[in-house]
Amino acid sequence: MSTTTDTPAVAPSGAPAPASGATVRARGTRLARLTRVRPLVAVTSALAVAALWEAYKLLGPAQGWAVGETRLLPRTTDLAMPHTWQVAARLLEPVSGATGADVLWLAVLRAGAFSFGIALVGWTIGVLVGALLALTMLRVAVVERAVLPLVVLSQTVPLIALAPLVRSWGARLEIGSFAWQPWMSVAVIASYLAFFPVAVGALRGLQSPDRIHVDLMRACGAGWGTTLVRLRLPAAVPHLLPALRLAAANAVVGAVVAEVATGLPGGLGRMILEFANFAASDPPKPWAPILGAVLLGLVAAGLVALLGRSLRRYRRVEVAP
Image 1: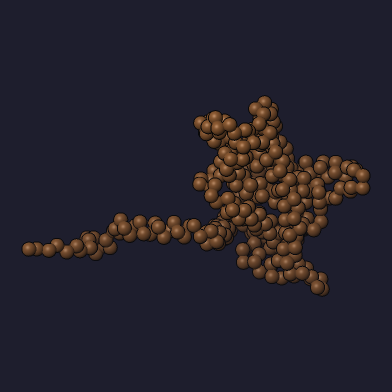
Image 2: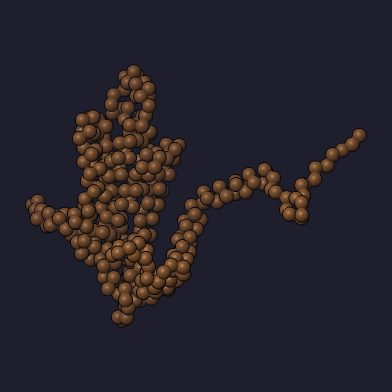
């Protein structure tokens, strides 16, 4: 009676043996498990962006690259593109040399909180308007054919040109003792960017149930409202959640750009405008509010993602808007 003992394969010339199928699957499982740790993915992504920044600064042309008067690649000089660690160090220094001046990161945090409040109002208005439009287009087919092209066309209007008009119209609005505040114009502009993905995503989600399921609800005697609540709204969740995250990011962008266009003080937009004057004397300083705006957009999208955790039972497959 003979026994056979499995021995690991040895590659010729002393090379290591190839990994077995079980080992490859184990490595793939560990990698997949790590990619599901969102904080780790976020930190890795931020480090990758910083590494890409430094790599381009090291290897890119000092004066950038332009075709005619169109600049395709930015300059890599310290004046135009400071090192990432210089920006980080500048955040820990006072905003200015004045006595009692706030630390730069604290000033950015306060401005970000102001912009976030306006963006939150704009996001709320945009979600309500977008959802109302989606329900109306779902209910009346002729409204969808008439309104949906206008909804898409509305996003082609330059925001920088629309902001002064909204501020001017709002300043003339008088309803009894109600006084239009400048920040309200910024919130309206933020909602202008936020409503579009919600309207399109919600409509697509509400129309996603199969025809046979809708006919089954009708055969059971369910009305339009019951079908909406029991069938269409749960089916719309995978479409609606990405739209809400995109709307949150759009609301932040709209608030910051509108603050720049209208000159509203107190927010990140005005801070970006003011700090741009220090680009020659203090190059890392203008990048602080820009970094704050990026983080504010990530926080807004992350809060919407937390909201989606309560709807996990409906998130079988999440669809990109």
